[in-house]
Length: 183
Image: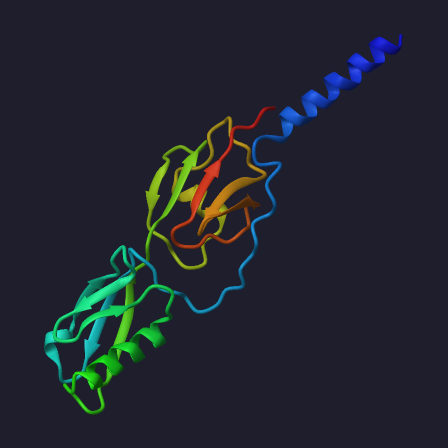
């Protein structure tokens, strides 16, 4: 009788562990309070400088995190807000003595994409839209497959990995993995 009870307890533990899925051991993804957007590689920016038409153009933040602008050279963009980037461009223009008081404007034209894989209809790379949640990201990818675990997904963000609920926010560059449900 004791052996039979031990066998049932072991079986229940195995089934419970299998139901949890691979993301069960991960900590919840740290929620980041929405703050000013920070530029990163892959963002597309429109720069306008009043009186310096040679700088007015659309630029892509390169994989090094910088943008190369004509006449002033490379300006670091990664990790900066748009306002900080505008100030850096204005400071570079002053340092090169091109203008005394430059009026710089920059706008984000396209955010870097997010990636989704696993149990969704169309896994792949998709453009980021501000205010996205995991559920809207799954919707963009065509919805869940019939095997998907719809309660929690794994999100990798800036080398941090964690569990996320359907209402968790998505950031540009996130890798979202929808796991298979066991039952």
